[in-house]
Image (tube, rainbow, N blue to C red; front, side, top):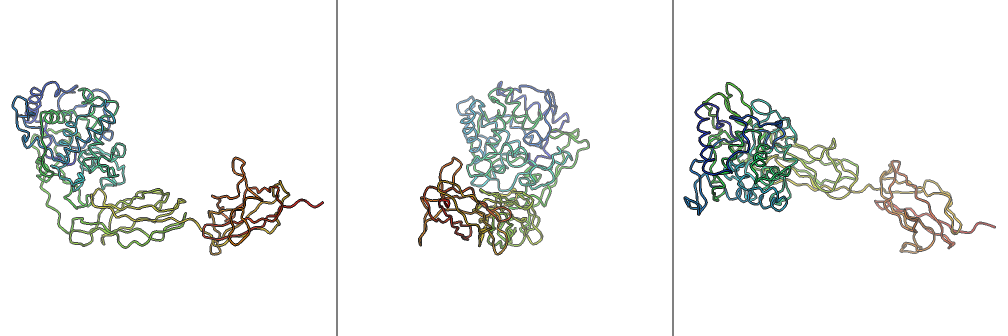
Length: 554
């Protein structure tokens, strides 16, 4: 989870007793659904069996909110207390967030009906992981105004998970951090990420994408979430802690008793967020320059997801809002020219972007990810299709040299502020075919054959471009008629295709590394005469070669 540091339940006698009373009250009021299928004891003890490693669970066992729901739970209309649907503040879920949970349930009901995923389970996990996307602070598409990032998983008080995404999602190229309203670590998102809002992207910072991904993750392994044992296993796969399971179960049962929709941005945010311990930057700031606020370390370190022996939680200092000069407002093209290159060559132009702050000035240390997209085999230097770099003091960053592959046509390179919801800067790049401006035979032998026979000598040509060898150039060979407007001849010499059929035009021929091309065998039909073979290169170079069909001399 992104932001819970000072609010974690402690193992001191007082708070443990409070937590026990709360869970017991919820279980008693809500029937068998609130009873855990298995409980390994108090605290954060692992369940029986081999526990997964920290990086094998969705969140990497990052911290989470341990606030429990109110003891007086809401009731759906028509139940004993018959509360109005407006309910309590805690039962309210922001509109976009609630819509995302329900849409994910519907989607999975269509693709995996046997899982029986309840949207209230997604709501419970979203509550403890991010406070329902920080009270519903999302835009119209469901993307958080700023990334929700967990602490750096560097083994210092938390799990040790080395970088798996080159900082593409979490802005950290050394260690991983849990990302987004459902707090996926990048390696898990790479496997389970979904496009829940049908915008063509899989963004862990988008509540629709994250909720659908969480649903698929919870349904893995043919689980039936209507069964308590399967539901418990699913939740523990998200964060392997019995305390986590009990907290999620409490909110799950609370939401099943009734909830209501509130406007985006007005949801209840756990105090640890409002108190300044949320490590996620405010809208528009870059996640990489400033590390997240950390709690005052306990005398005795605790496991990820667990408490410590210190009964008095520390209160981290609040983080002041970013200054306009430190707020990322825009990412723009920094003067990149036309991107064109011949197949196999490097693009002469380099892609360059500039990060600007709210005052229109340059902003340094902004993480920018360049991604090659489209039907292309072009790559950045080193064979990479995705590269993440950081802006310099002038606010600019230049992508590595882009090298064209053999696939011709247009493709796109996108530059985005890593982990941000700002629009991408898109560049169109074009790869043209290799060309030749001259082509000629490598010898001058007469090419003759008897009717019905094959030509003894092969046709070999060499292509050049501006006097240099033109390798890999496409060549078309056609048997043509005489006249001012030659067309393909329907008689005379011919080639054979792979099935032995007669063809008089060959395409997809290419010169080799030396710029030479040796044509396949040429055959003569029964009609004697002099015929023409035309070879044309990409780039317009042409050579016409005579072929003679005549009976041998007596």
